[in-house]
Amino acid sequence: MPTRSKAAAKTKSMLGIDQIIRIMTDRYGPFAEEPRLDAAHEIVFTILSQHTSDTNSSRAYHLLMDKFATLEEVARGEPEDIERTIAPGGLAKIKAPRIKQVLNLILELNGSLDLSFLRELPLDEAKAWLRQLPGIGPKSAGIILSFALGMPAMAVDTHIYRVSKRLALIGPKVTADKAHDILEAVVEPDQVYPFHLAFITHGRQVCKAQRPLCGECVVAEACPSREQFMAPAEVPQEPPKKASRASAKSQTKKTGVLPHSVAIKE
Ligand code: SF4
Picture 1 (cartoon, rainbow, N blue to C red):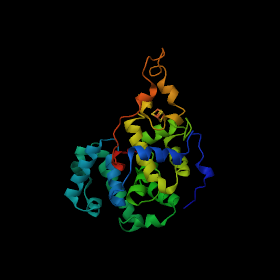
Picture 2 (picture 1 turned 135 degrees about the horizontal axis):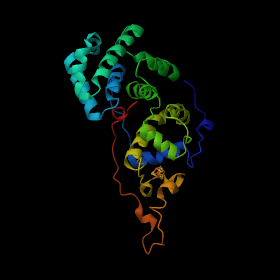
Picture 3 (picture 1 turned 45 degrees about the vertical axis):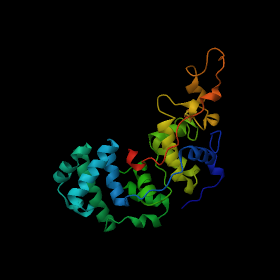
């Protein structure tokens, strides 16, 4: 696995990435690692979660496992049966053949659905192995490696992408796919998991897509985008009489761990 130097951890952000992670973890964490699905199940779950809600994908996954019991049986199943079973999850016509195809391709390539061998590979090789599977892009590969196999792979969802841009951790023209490599290079391996959960939580609760709550943001002092969002609506046109901006400090309650891979769509 390539080592990451301190020099590589420099970004255009006004705070170091390690400081940002620490500040956000103090606010939203601590983030306990949860027991996860194994890698093959995580792949199926990831496919089911594409372009649908967490509730629907979770329901589809449980229906699938109730009906077929094992993924080997899903691999042998009739596409129509799989499609009918996962129909409540949406896009079943596309997802059913894809699940069957991916499971059979894994069996063909690996001889079994046990993907624990990926842990022994360098991170880039493990990613490349997963990316050869239909429907598995950089984000899905990151989720599977990170959450199912405990590897320090970056999975950049829409929240992480947005927050990283606003904090200038990535440039304004960097694509979501490219962001995986850039962020993975600047976040220390043991910080990938807290980074992931802290940024998703921050993006959902504070640095929202339409109206970020910059007045409640714990890293606002270091954010080059703050002025853009605070003006003109949040910047007073006349001097305030008594209230100070400091009084707008967050009342947001600390939250626990959020769902992670289940909330991330490719
Ligand atoms: S200051 Fe505003 S734009 Fe910057 S990270 Fe915080 S919420 Fe997002």
